[in-house]
Amino acid sequence: MQDPLEKLKIKRRELDKIDKEILDLLRRRFEVIKEITETKRSLGMPVYDKEREEEVLTTRGIWGLERGIPLEFTEKVFRMILDESKKVQLHSPERVYVGIYGYGGMAEQLVKVFSRAGHRVVVTGRNLEKAKDLAKRYKVEWGRPEEVAKEVEWLILAVPPEALKDLVSELAPLMRSGALISDISSVKKHVVEEILEVLPEYIEYVSLHPLFGPEVEPLGETVVVVPAKSYDYWPRLVENILVSMGFDVITTTPDEHDRAMAVTQVLHHFALVSLDEAAEKLSKEYGVDYMRYATRSFKNTLQTMRRLKELSSVIDEIQRNNEYAAHAREEFLRTAAALDEKWRER
Image 1 (cartoon, rainbow, N blue to C red):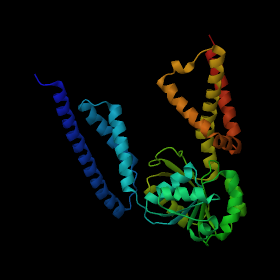
Image 2 (image 1 turned 30 degrees about the vertical axis):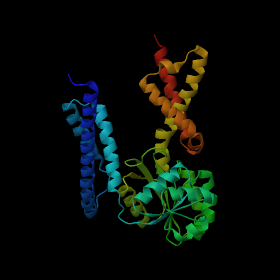
Image 3 (image 1 turned 90 degrees about the vertical axis):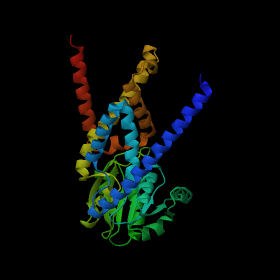
């Protein structure tokens, strides 16, 4: 009879061999991806092809099931592979000199995606040490705000909305004629109006709203583009650059943006913050630890609620400054009251 320990060693060596084969196949896959990227570049095609990605996930899921591999596992593995593949494909049709003002989570996301797509990136901000630290992490430039404003083609202000007007007043006059300035605020109408009040005639302005947080891999996520003051050149270039970096782009107006956000952000945040506070109050009133009874669905919701607590200032901004927020909350409460009345009927 074979010694069990010896059999274990043999099987582990077999696993080592299989793992090397998996890594060799992944390397070959990325080599093919690079070849596909060159073809895409010659055709002017974007990195992200949503239909192709869905096709890959569907077919690989079926292939996995045919081989006795759970669908959820196969999808998780191939999502990781597809995300890495998109990174390999990153390229830009035209590279620009981009200044990122800020050093928080979203500023870091912007530095990461622009630098890995081959753009020249410089980080700046009031706190030069923080700007320098962020720049060093991604091997990009850093500099004083005044110097950066004079040099860059595109300045993105990744700061809270209440700081934007003063910052634009300070830096925009230093920028070159025809240069572009952008913000990344979650509310557009009043922000755009404030910036336009102080923006020099010779500076163009395209407002952005990345519809993702600083903690996610942004490839495949959506960025809203709001051309506020610009000729055709910059809006077209901004959209081409973002699409080439793997983003889905929506171009809209400040008013339409805020109406859409009243549904997707105001309602969402209002419902989850209300749920969180009500759950805590009822837990104490009923004398139960509701976490012990949480379903998987509720646990997923709890994770989102915890994340929202970390973004309380952003939520306040959206709820207070979106002019459609109060109406959206009223509709939510009317709908909730109607459902309550329906379920009270016997």
